Length: 120
Image (cartoon, rainbow, N blue to C red; front, top):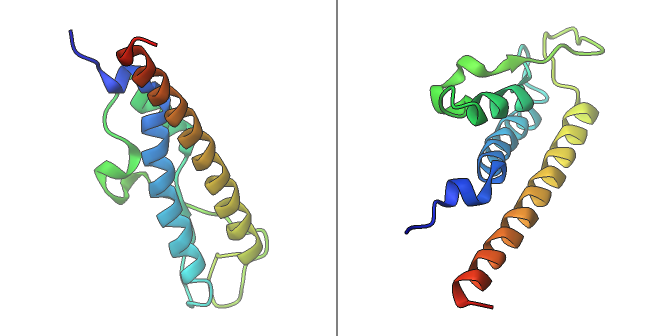
């Protein structure tokens, strides 16, 4: 009888991967903060994770840029850039915190499995 890690880790394995991909997207937004005409992008994390958990296909970014959404700015700039530094920094920080939470849960699950295997 084998261990199915995807079942043992639950939602956290997919959440970690999706959060890592979202980090790249937000970092790209931050890097292009002063690029004229750049459109800030993001994903709908909850919808993408929900689709994956329902078995409706791969995670959002596995299919390319089709699932990336454009962010609507609170204060549009004259050069057409929709990146707002404070908003992006806040989202980056929140995403990093959520990533760390999922990583902690994953570590706890793996330690529990190791103890079960060792018979403790």
